[in-house]
Image: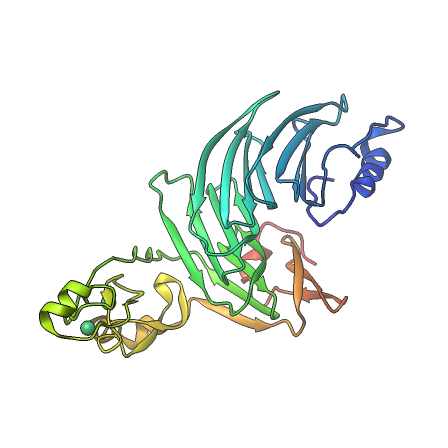
Length: 331
Ligand SMILES: [Zn+2]
Ligand SMILES: [Zn+2]
């Protein structure tokens, strides 16, 4: 096997797989690896490293050849998901605080390279594409972020199309499509083969950046102008801090990842043309509460597991593009 992920409460199952498939009769104990639930695990065949993380707020990596623990690193939150790039020995760990930590794992030590902060809820899924050097993260805040790691400019794209926790993501490098599933059964296929725009940073202001009325915490200006403070909102397209009156309209804006209607200021609303509202993703109904998903990309098959204890196998070839057929054996 190449990679395993899942919610093992014990590593016994994996230990048996290692014994059966690759280790012959060689045995070692993994019982002491984690002190709590293991949330993600990955095996790197090239280095023969077994990397795991879990609710003991710890990532550990061990050598399956010697059976010895190589290193451990502790986080401040429960770790929820893990991706590993064996070529550069970088691990990405998502956690319940909504942060992703990028670590470089060495033989007996590790160093924290950076932390990626952008989600407002726990990270539920990660996907690393080593070819384009893109990291995708799904979170309980219903959103997906694409982190352009290889671009080295801190470019991020926000994808908002789900109405519940994003539970699983899978990037199909060949067709440049991202498949995502959410807890409410939503399945989205995102077109990542177009140049998308970054969502703006939200600007801070003490008064509306359109009509200049003060926001409610701006006591001084309220006193001076004898006006009552307004609630602050943000236009999703330009990022300006605006009052409700100056942002009455809603629009989708798929090029920035907003597949459903979001608040925009009145001038941005005017600037959005009808063709700008054309969806850049397709949405499908899974009809069960998806908790896990995995794809067999070569055959265009997807399997979803639900909290209803039902496993569904999907033929995704009608939506993941005909280019899948090229270079792969037919089904
Ligand atoms: Zn205003
Ligand atoms: Zn605007």
